[in-house]
Amino acid sequence: MKLHILGCYAATPRTMTNPSSQVLEIRNHLFLIDCGEGTQVQLRKNKIKFSRINHIFISHLHGDHFFGLPGMISTFRLLGRDKEMHIYGPKGIKEAITLLLKLGDSWTNYPLIFHELVSKDSEVIFEDAKVSVETIPLDHRIYTNGFLFKEKVTDRTLNIHAVTKKKIDKAYFQNIKNGKDVVLDNGTVVPNAELSFDPPAPMSYAYCSDTAFKVEVIPQILGVDVLYHESTFLESESHLTEKTKHSTAKEAACIARDAKVSTLLLGHYSTRYKSIELFKEEAKTIFDNVELADDGKLFEF
Amino acid sequence: MKLHILGCYAATPRTMTNPSSQVLEIRNHLFLIDCGEGTQVQLRKNKIKFSRINHIFISHLHGDHFFGLPGMISTFRLLGRDKEMHIYGPKGIKEAITLLLKLGDSWTNYPLIFHELVSKDSEVIFEDAKVSVETIPLDHRIYTNGFLFKEKVTDRTLNIHAVTKKKIDKAYFQNIKNGKDVVLDNGTVVPNAELSFDPPAPMSYAYCSDTAFKVEVIPQILGVDVLYHESTFLESESHLTEKTKHSTAKEAACIARDAKVSTLLLGHYSTRYKSIELFKEEAKTIFDNVELADDGKLFEF
Image (tube, rainbow over all chains, first blue to last red; front, side):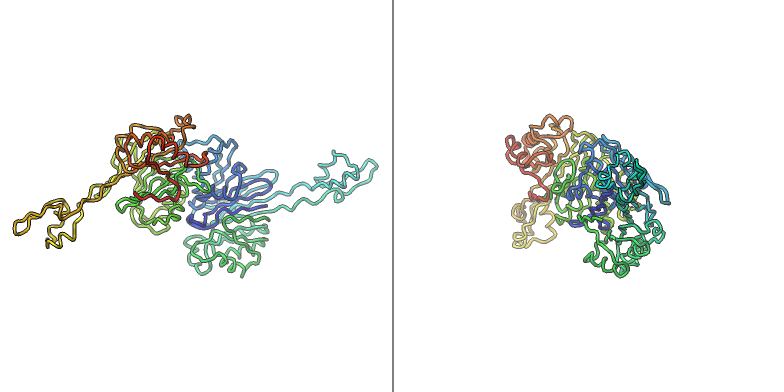
């Protein structure tokens, strides 16, 4: 599982900082999560192929998470895309994009499929044999969802050396991958454990931005491998969190601790602070395994 | 008159090139002309104060001229703007911006005043004591206007040394600026030319992008000091101009020559070419005084 941070700063694009956007590589999918202004340039800088993106998840319709999307959609057209593009985001996103395309008489020549979200409860919004994606209802000034990406348990991995040695016919392979023992022609039972390896442990990634401190997310994200949780402020500005519906680094760390996640990734920093290291220091007083997102940074988990 | 080129490349923002946007400094106004994605970052890079911009002119509603506007409007709010902002652009621009603000529940706390354009004839859309701005109807795939910025003739400049020496009372100064002679108490007539200097010659700037070759613009822009004319293509791609409604560098130069402008500024380059110098070479076969716009370049006229 890889995570490319394209932008992770709050509010407004600046010379050296970009608004929210990231690409999650998971089981051969490239999922684009949020799309602030400048995202397409960040994709180019990070050498991510536009053509590999087929699903875009938008948390909410504030500009710093969404104003890069109209340009992305136009650029996909200019690049000659013909594959479907799926966009998941709050109700209204279809009307907005459609209006912009209509005004420019710039309809896409690829199918643009909107999945508009309205539910206040978590729901599975994407699922295939390898991965599922569900919404994480958050607490922000407008309707906002985080997203929980979960790898599925896959088949066991065939122990090629062992099956060759025991001359086991290919016809048995799928059963072995499914965990079954093999009964040889002479009646001998070969235990599955001798013929296959455990599948890779399924990983999970939770994206929680933007949100005020919300303990209700904890049961849903319990034990995830990586939690990206917004930390717009430090505790010194905690008086701003209620009005703005953002979190502090300490609050993000409390969520990480109580949800027993493996790694906490902080982001969505207000640019009022001198150094983002301050966020890490604050979070580490609560939770040990803290990483700082930063524009252009690639994490491999 | 100063012109800051923020972006002058066609189609889509890239790592090193930006879509259309520029700032014209004219008689103490800062006019923002077009606003492709990334314009606000380009303003920062070029150290242009956001607060000095009160008028934004949008030529047409293709993304590369317009998708930076929603973010700009949000950023003005975050910067605490309270002054009016005037936006001039094709009908539909108000609906688009209003919808985006509504979806984000991010209404501005400053007056946002839209001047929607529908006329196919040129019209004066801004005028004060110092400057006028009129539309230049262009020929593009959708409704598009260029803009003609004209300084007005100002008062004559007082010759302080001369009026002091002749002990002329302040009460006469405005008459002198208006070009009148002064009759002294002893009946002597002092000719105006001895008491004042000619005012600065009024300058003019025409912005023509995007457009196919359109000779009908020539009478309107006759003799302007600077003509920015799009040159998306070279003549080698002239077969693309009819369908895309863009111009070649040679066509831009023909307009400049026939309109007897002082300087032709080329821009809106397709990124298919190795060097923008090729545009200059082609234009120079027709018209001598050619300059190349480029991102971050500042012209003083």
